Amino acid sequence: MASPLRQLELFAVDLDDTSDDDDAFSSSSSRAPTVGSSRASVASVDNVKNREKKRRTPLSPREQESQPHLTSDARTFANTIIAFLGSGMLGLPFAFRQCGILLGLATLVFVAAVSTYAMLLVVQCKYKLREQGRRVTTYGEIGHIAAGRVGGLLVDCSLVVSQSSFCIAYLIFIASNAHKFLEVPRELVVAVCAPPLVAFSLLKHMRELAFVALLADVMVLLGLAVVLWKDLAYMELNQSRVEALGALSSVPFFFGVATYCFEGVGMVLPLENSMQHKRNFTPILVSTVVIVTAIYATFGICGYLAFGDATQDVITLNIDGSDGLATIVKLFLCAGLFFTHPVMLFPVFEVLKPLVRVKSGQRGRREGREGSLDRSSGTVEGPVGDQVDETKSALLRATVVLITALIAAGVPNFGRFIAFIGSTCCALLGFVLPALFYLRIYEADAPLSGQRVPWLKKALLYVIMLIGALVFGAGVYDAIASMF
Image 1 (cartoon, rainbow, N blue to C red):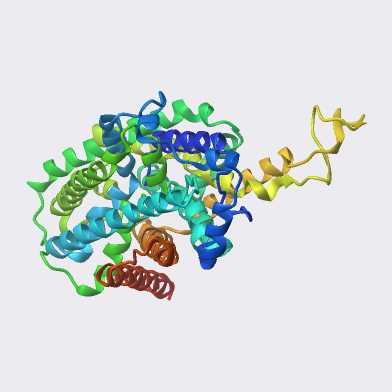
Image 2: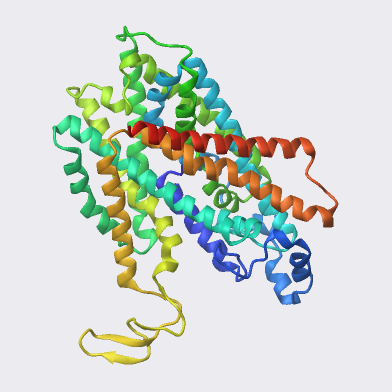
C-alpha cells in the first residue's frame, strides 16, 4: 500500500506517461484488442500506419535513461520501502496474537514471496505487450487487453474498493483511539472528521495535496517508530502467555492482514515507469520486500511480546494513555492517517471521472464555452464535448467521502476490517488477476512466438490463483460469520 506522498508522485508520473502517448490504452477503451483473438490483434498491429508504429514503439534503454524526470535506483529503493510502511502495520501484533509467532512468521514470509512474484508478473505482462507494439502504462490497461472490458473493469472496481477501504480503515483507527482517549462516541469522532475531508476531496490538482502528503508521511513514520520503541519498553513488564504456534483456523485471518500490508500491485508499473534504469527494478523490488518483511515481523512480534494475550486489534490502544509521549504518538498517527485519507482517494476520483463527464453532442453548462449565455448563473450553455460536469464531480467526491465515513462509523474492529479487505480486494488484485492476465497474454502469444508457458510455471500460476480464490472465500466467510 503506497504512502501518501509516493502515491501522488507515482500517480503524476502515470498521468505524464499516458499523456505523452496518444495511443495509451485506458481500461475503458474500446480500441484495445484483447488477447482472446490473437490473430486479429497481430494483424491490426502489422497493418497500422508508420506514424502509428513510431508512436507506439517503446523507448530504448538509452532513451529511457536520458529522460530527466526519471528516478535513480537509490530513490526508487527508498520510495518503495516508504510506500509499504503504512497503517496495516498497526494490526500485525494482533494478527501474531491470533496465529502465534512461528506460524505467523511463516505466513508473513509466504505472503511476501507470493506478492512479490505476482507483482513481477504484471511487469512481465507489460513488456510482452510492448513487444507486440502496445505501449501500456497501467494495471487497468493490461487487464483490458488480457481479458477485455471485464478485465479492465475488475481491476478498476477492485482498486476503487481497496483504496476506499484503506480510507475507511484510517477513520476506524482515528475513531477507536479518540474514543478511548477522549471517551467520546466513535460516531461523533467520524462525524467531526467528515466535513474537512469533504473539503479536501474538492481539491482538483495533485500538487495541492503535496504538502499534506509529505506531512502525513512524516507523522505516520515517526508514530510507527515510537510505537516500536514503546513496545520494547513494555516487553520487560509483560507477564502474559505468548504462543509460538496458534490455531490453524487463524491462518486465513493472518493471511488477510499480511495481504493488506503487502498490497502494492497497483503501484508496481508506475514505480517501474518512473525508474531511470528499469533493468534494475526486479532486484530493487526483491531486496525492498525482504527489508520490509523484516520490519513487519519485528513490529508485529515485538508488539505481541509486549502485551501477549492482551494485544488489541490496534496496538496503540494498548499503550498507556497517561504517558505524555504515548499521547503525542497517537496524535501523530491519527493526524497522519487523517491527511492520508484525501491522497488515497485521489486515484478513486480519477477512475470514477467518466461517471461525471458530459459526452460530445450533449448540452451542458460550463464557463468559457461558446453557446447561449445563461443570464441567471453567468455560465455558458451549449455543447461541451467530453468535459467534466463540475457540480456532479463535487457531489460524487463528497458522496465517496461520506460513504467511507458511514462505513467507518459502523465498523468497530480495525483488525477484522483490514483482514477482510486483504482477503478480498487485495487478494484479487495481488494474486488472482496477475496470474490470470499473465496466462492469457502469454498463451495468446504462443502460436506466433513459438514460446509456450512451461508446464511447471503454468501449474504455479494456477496454484497462485487457487490460493487467492481460497483466501477470498475465507475472508467473505469470516466476515459473514462475525455478523452472527
